[in-house]
Image 1 (cartoon, rainbow, N blue to C red):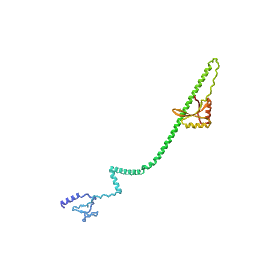
Image 2 (cartoon, rainbow, N blue to C red):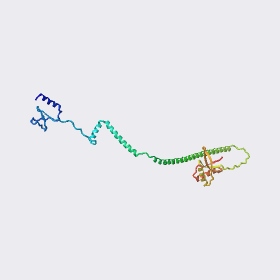
Image 3 (spheres, rainbow, N blue to C red):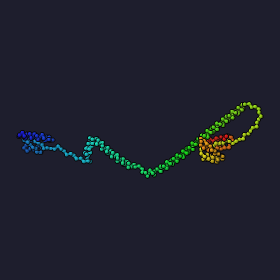
Image 4 (cartoon, rainbow, N blue to C red):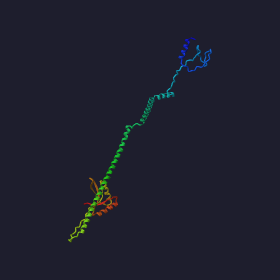
Length: 275
Protein backbone atom coordinates (compact mmCIF):
# COMPACT_ATOMS: atom_id res chain seq x y z
CA UNK A 1 0.00 0.00 0.00
CA UNK A 2 1.40 3.34 -1.04
CA UNK A 3 1.14 6.79 0.51
CA UNK A 4 -1.26 7.90 -2.24
CA UNK A 5 -3.76 5.20 -1.31
CA UNK A 6 -3.59 6.17 2.36
CA UNK A 7 -4.22 9.84 1.63
CA UNK A 8 -7.18 9.02 -0.63
CA UNK A 9 -8.81 6.80 1.97
CA UNK A 10 -8.26 9.48 4.64
CA UNK A 11 -9.81 12.20 2.44
CA UNK A 12 -12.93 10.13 1.71
CA UNK A 13 -13.56 9.59 5.41
CA UNK A 14 -13.43 13.36 5.99
CA UNK A 15 -15.82 14.22 3.13
CA UNK A 16 -18.50 11.60 3.89
CA UNK A 17 -21.12 12.54 6.55
CA UNK A 18 -21.18 10.73 9.77
CA UNK A 19 -23.27 7.59 9.55
CA UNK A 20 -26.19 7.31 12.01
CA UNK A 21 -25.32 3.70 12.47
CA UNK A 22 -22.57 2.63 14.79
CA UNK A 23 -20.01 0.40 13.22
CA UNK A 24 -20.07 -3.03 14.67
CA UNK A 25 -17.03 -5.21 14.74
CA UNK A 26 -16.93 -7.79 12.02
CA UNK A 27 -14.74 -10.66 11.27
CA UNK A 28 -12.26 -10.37 8.49
CA UNK A 29 -13.64 -12.97 6.16
CA UNK A 30 -12.86 -13.27 2.56
CA UNK A 31 -16.49 -12.67 1.41
CA UNK A 32 -16.72 -9.00 2.60
CA UNK A 33 -20.33 -9.29 4.04
CA UNK A 34 -21.31 -7.60 7.33
CA UNK A 35 -23.46 -9.06 9.98
CA UNK A 36 -26.38 -6.79 8.87
CA UNK A 37 -26.64 -8.40 5.48
CA UNK A 38 -25.37 -5.55 3.26
CA UNK A 39 -22.18 -5.47 1.26
CA UNK A 40 -19.34 -3.23 2.34
CA UNK A 41 -16.24 -2.31 0.46
CA UNK A 42 -13.08 -3.30 2.19
CA UNK A 43 -9.91 -1.51 1.37
CA UNK A 44 -6.53 -2.81 1.73
CA UNK A 45 -6.32 -1.55 5.37
CA UNK A 46 -9.39 -3.64 6.34
CA UNK A 47 -11.75 -0.69 7.10
CA UNK A 48 -15.37 -0.74 5.81
CA UNK A 49 -17.32 2.24 4.38
CA UNK A 50 -21.14 2.23 5.10
CA UNK A 51 -23.55 3.27 2.32
CA UNK A 52 -24.54 6.97 2.13
CA UNK A 53 -27.96 7.85 3.57
CA UNK A 54 -29.75 11.15 2.78
CA UNK A 55 -30.82 13.41 5.71
CA UNK A 56 -33.51 15.35 3.64
CA UNK A 57 -37.11 14.56 4.53
CA UNK A 58 -40.12 15.22 2.33
CA UNK A 59 -42.39 17.92 3.86
CA UNK A 60 -45.82 16.89 4.97
CA UNK A 61 -48.79 17.94 2.87
CA UNK A 62 -51.71 19.53 4.79
CA UNK A 63 -55.26 19.90 3.63
CA UNK A 64 -57.47 22.92 4.50
CA UNK A 65 -59.94 20.97 6.59
CA UNK A 66 -57.49 18.86 8.54
CA UNK A 67 -56.70 19.31 12.21
CA UNK A 68 -53.01 19.50 11.42
CA UNK A 69 -53.58 22.60 9.30
CA UNK A 70 -55.69 24.26 12.04
CA UNK A 71 -53.15 23.52 14.76
CA UNK A 72 -50.33 24.76 12.54
CA UNK A 73 -52.23 27.97 11.74
CA UNK A 74 -53.00 28.60 15.40
CA UNK A 75 -49.36 28.08 16.25
CA UNK A 76 -48.34 30.73 13.71
CA UNK A 77 -51.12 33.05 14.96
CA UNK A 78 -49.91 32.78 18.55
CA UNK A 79 -46.46 33.74 17.41
CA UNK A 80 -47.98 36.77 15.60
CA UNK A 81 -50.75 38.29 17.86
CA UNK A 82 -51.45 41.12 15.42
CA UNK A 83 -52.62 38.65 12.80
CA UNK A 84 -54.87 36.88 15.35
CA UNK A 85 -56.36 40.21 16.44
CA UNK A 86 -57.04 41.29 12.85
CA UNK A 87 -58.79 38.04 12.01
CA UNK A 88 -60.87 38.22 15.21
CA UNK A 89 -61.97 41.78 14.44
CA UNK A 90 -62.89 40.81 10.88
CA UNK A 91 -65.07 37.94 12.09
CA UNK A 92 -66.72 40.13 14.76
CA UNK A 93 -67.48 42.89 12.23
CA UNK A 94 -68.93 40.37 9.83
CA UNK A 95 -71.30 38.95 12.46
CA UNK A 96 -72.28 42.47 13.57
CA UNK A 97 -73.14 43.54 10.02
CA UNK A 98 -75.23 40.42 9.51
CA UNK A 99 -77.09 40.98 12.79
CA UNK A 100 -77.67 44.68 12.01
CA UNK A 101 -79.08 43.86 8.60
CA UNK A 102 -81.44 41.28 10.09
CA UNK A 103 -82.59 43.71 12.81
CA UNK A 104 -83.20 46.54 10.34
CA UNK A 105 -85.17 44.28 8.05
CA UNK A 106 -87.59 43.46 10.91
CA UNK A 107 -87.91 47.06 12.21
CA UNK A 108 -88.89 49.10 9.21
CA UNK A 109 -90.48 52.54 9.93
CA UNK A 110 -94.21 52.85 9.23
CA UNK A 111 -95.11 53.91 5.76
CA UNK A 112 -96.65 57.29 4.92
CA UNK A 113 -100.04 55.66 4.34
CA UNK A 114 -100.17 54.33 7.88
CA UNK A 115 -99.25 57.74 9.30
CA UNK A 116 -101.92 59.42 7.19
CA UNK A 117 -104.59 57.01 8.40
CA UNK A 118 -103.65 57.48 12.07
CA UNK A 119 -103.28 61.27 12.06
CA UNK A 120 -107.01 62.17 11.67
CA UNK A 121 -108.01 59.93 14.57
CA UNK A 122 -105.29 61.41 16.75
CA UNK A 123 -106.33 64.96 15.84
CA UNK A 124 -109.95 64.12 16.57
CA UNK A 125 -109.03 62.85 20.02
CA UNK A 126 -106.96 65.96 20.70
CA UNK A 127 -109.84 68.24 19.62
CA UNK A 128 -112.26 66.34 21.85
CA UNK A 129 -109.90 66.73 24.81
CA UNK A 130 -109.60 70.46 24.16
CA UNK A 131 -113.37 70.87 24.02
CA UNK A 132 -113.75 68.98 27.29
CA UNK A 133 -111.10 71.16 28.92
CA UNK A 134 -112.82 74.31 27.67
CA UNK A 135 -116.11 73.20 29.19
CA UNK A 136 -114.47 72.34 32.48
CA UNK A 137 -112.69 75.70 32.57
CA UNK A 138 -115.96 77.53 31.86
CA UNK A 139 -117.72 75.63 34.64
CA UNK A 140 -114.89 76.38 37.07
CA UNK A 141 -114.99 80.06 36.12
CA UNK A 142 -118.74 80.21 36.81
CA UNK A 143 -118.25 78.51 40.17
CA UNK A 144 -115.48 80.95 41.04
CA UNK A 145 -117.69 83.91 40.14
CA UNK A 146 -120.52 82.51 42.27
CA UNK A 147 -118.15 82.08 45.22
CA UNK A 148 -117.02 85.69 44.85
CA UNK A 149 -120.63 86.87 44.80
CA UNK A 150 -121.45 84.84 47.89
CA UNK A 151 -118.48 86.32 49.71
CA UNK A 152 -119.59 89.78 48.64
CA UNK A 153 -123.11 89.12 49.91
CA UNK A 154 -121.75 87.94 53.24
CA UNK A 155 -119.61 91.03 53.52
CA UNK A 156 -122.64 93.18 52.75
CA UNK A 157 -124.64 91.33 55.37
CA UNK A 158 -121.92 91.91 57.96
CA UNK A 159 -121.77 95.58 57.06
CA UNK A 160 -125.58 95.94 57.28
CA UNK A 161 -125.69 94.11 60.59
CA UNK A 162 -122.92 96.32 61.92
CA UNK A 163 -124.80 99.46 60.88
CA UNK A 164 -127.99 98.19 62.48
CA UNK A 165 -126.12 97.37 65.67
CA UNK A 166 -124.54 100.81 65.80
CA UNK A 167 -127.91 102.41 65.21
CA UNK A 168 -129.48 100.40 68.03
CA UNK A 169 -126.63 101.31 70.37
CA UNK A 170 -127.03 104.98 69.52
CA UNK A 171 -130.80 104.83 70.04
CA UNK A 172 -130.34 103.07 73.35
CA UNK A 173 -127.79 105.60 74.56
CA UNK A 174 -130.07 108.41 73.46
CA UNK A 175 -132.98 106.91 75.35
CA UNK A 176 -130.87 106.55 78.49
CA UNK A 177 -129.72 110.12 78.21
CA UNK A 178 -133.29 111.36 77.80
CA UNK A 179 -134.43 109.27 80.72
CA UNK A 180 -131.75 110.70 82.98
CA UNK A 181 -132.30 114.33 81.97
CA UNK A 182 -135.20 115.99 83.86
CA UNK A 183 -137.97 117.13 81.56
CA UNK A 184 -139.55 120.54 81.92
CA UNK A 185 -143.28 120.70 82.04
CA UNK A 186 -144.52 121.45 78.57
CA UNK A 187 -147.68 121.03 76.73
CA UNK A 188 -148.07 117.76 74.99
CA UNK A 189 -147.69 118.08 71.27
CA UNK A 190 -149.84 116.14 68.97
CA UNK A 191 -147.90 113.06 67.88
CA UNK A 192 -147.62 112.40 64.19
CA UNK A 193 -148.34 108.86 63.29
CA UNK A 194 -145.73 107.31 61.05
CA UNK A 195 -147.05 105.48 58.05
CA UNK A 196 -145.40 102.08 57.91
CA UNK A 197 -143.51 101.46 54.68
CA UNK A 198 -142.71 98.15 53.09
CA UNK A 199 -139.01 98.69 52.40
CA UNK A 200 -137.66 95.41 53.81
CA UNK A 201 -136.55 92.64 51.50
CA UNK A 202 -135.39 89.06 51.83
CA UNK A 203 -132.21 88.45 49.89
CA UNK A 204 -132.44 85.01 48.28
CA UNK A 205 -129.12 85.03 46.45
CA UNK A 206 -126.98 86.76 43.85
CA UNK A 207 -125.90 84.92 40.72
CA UNK A 208 -123.38 85.54 37.96
CA UNK A 209 -125.67 84.19 35.23
CA UNK A 210 -129.26 85.07 34.44
CA UNK A 211 -130.22 81.42 33.90
CA UNK A 212 -129.33 80.53 37.49
CA UNK A 213 -131.44 83.43 38.78
CA UNK A 214 -134.41 82.33 36.64
CA UNK A 215 -134.13 78.78 37.94
CA UNK A 216 -134.40 79.98 41.55
CA UNK A 217 -137.30 82.30 40.66
CA UNK A 218 -139.28 79.40 39.18
CA UNK A 219 -138.57 77.23 42.22
CA UNK A 220 -139.89 79.86 44.68
CA UNK A 221 -142.82 80.85 42.47
CA UNK A 222 -144.01 77.23 42.70
CA UNK A 223 -144.09 77.71 46.50
CA UNK A 224 -146.28 80.83 46.20
CA UNK A 225 -143.66 83.58 46.61
CA UNK A 226 -143.45 86.63 44.33
CA UNK A 227 -139.74 86.78 43.59
CA UNK A 228 -138.00 89.60 41.73
CA UNK A 229 -134.76 89.61 39.77
CA UNK A 230 -132.76 92.84 39.86
CA UNK A 231 -129.60 93.56 37.92
CA UNK A 232 -126.60 94.72 39.88
CA UNK A 233 -122.82 94.79 39.56
CA UNK A 234 -120.09 93.29 41.67
CA UNK A 235 -116.36 93.72 41.10
CA UNK A 236 -117.08 95.44 37.76
CA UNK A 237 -119.06 92.42 36.60
CA UNK A 238 -122.77 92.16 35.97
CA UNK A 239 -124.75 90.09 38.49
CA UNK A 240 -128.35 89.14 39.13
CA UNK A 241 -129.92 89.48 42.59
CA UNK A 242 -133.00 87.45 43.52
CA UNK A 243 -135.05 89.00 46.32
CA UNK A 244 -138.48 88.88 47.96
CA UNK A 245 -139.76 92.42 48.66
CA UNK A 246 -142.79 93.87 50.51
CA UNK A 247 -142.07 93.56 54.24
CA UNK A 248 -142.80 96.38 56.68
CA UNK A 249 -140.14 95.42 59.23
CA UNK A 250 -137.16 93.19 59.83
CA UNK A 251 -139.02 90.70 61.99
CA UNK A 252 -141.59 89.77 59.37
CA UNK A 253 -138.88 89.50 56.69
CA UNK A 254 -136.74 87.20 58.82
CA UNK A 255 -139.73 84.95 59.59
CA UNK A 256 -140.40 84.47 55.87
CA UNK A 257 -136.69 83.84 55.26
CA UNK A 258 -136.65 81.06 57.87
CA UNK A 259 -139.76 79.49 56.36
CA UNK A 260 -138.20 79.49 52.88
CA UNK A 261 -135.01 77.85 54.21
CA UNK A 262 -137.15 75.12 55.80
CA UNK A 263 -139.01 74.51 52.53
CA UNK A 264 -135.92 74.48 50.27
CA UNK A 265 -132.22 73.69 50.43
CA UNK A 266 -131.28 77.39 50.56
CA UNK A 267 -129.11 78.68 53.40
CA UNK A 268 -127.91 82.06 54.58
CA UNK A 269 -131.00 84.08 53.66
CA UNK A 270 -131.07 87.47 55.30
CA UNK A 271 -133.28 90.54 55.49
CA UNK A 272 -132.26 94.03 54.53
CA UNK A 273 -133.84 97.44 54.12
CA UNK A 274 -133.85 99.41 50.89
CA UNK A 275 -133.10 103.00 51.88
